[in-house]
Amino acid sequence: MHTVYLALGTNLGSRIANLKSAIAALPPQMTMKAKSPVYETPPWGYTEQGAFLNQVVKVETYLEPEPLLKHLKRLELALGRVPNFQNGPRLIDLDILFFDDLVLDTPELVIPHPRLHERGFVLVPLNDIAPDLLHPEFKKTVSELMAGCDTSEIKVFKR
Image 1 (spheres, rainbow, N blue to C red):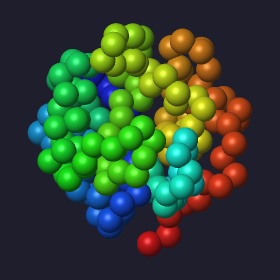
Image 2: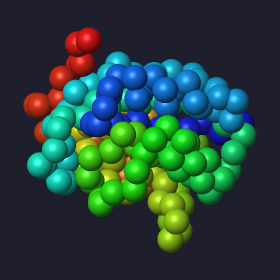
Image 3: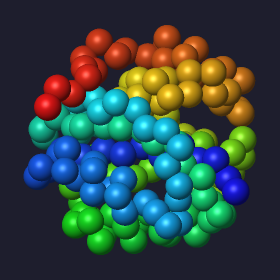
Image 4: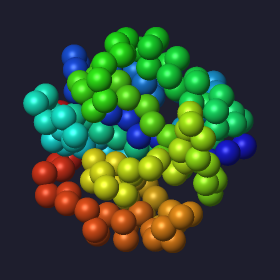
């Protein structure tokens, strides 16, 4: 079994329902081990869109990295995601942040996620469930990475 951290994000439709549906769709290929609180975050990259809800989950899976990526992309489509431009609005986004302590760089997949250290909307929820998780390339913990990131506009989502 592999330990994997996934980032979930949404800014279209019923955002909280989108996150709940995504989490409900993870089994049987993945077993939930931990989940962060939900955070409301400003858009990143393309800023002319609504605020996101973001969450990070820790799962165990028997899937290897590339089959896991394919599975997550199928789940996004099944949950209603429509292909869009990079960093654009989306119904659901499922990204692999860490896969065990693997470092992988292929045309299809980069692990750890190549921009997670720049993204407060990923680091804040990840810090809730894995503050001491060590980035295998940067040799810094999640909490150390978060200290170098602007998190001032990231707030716990109040339903």
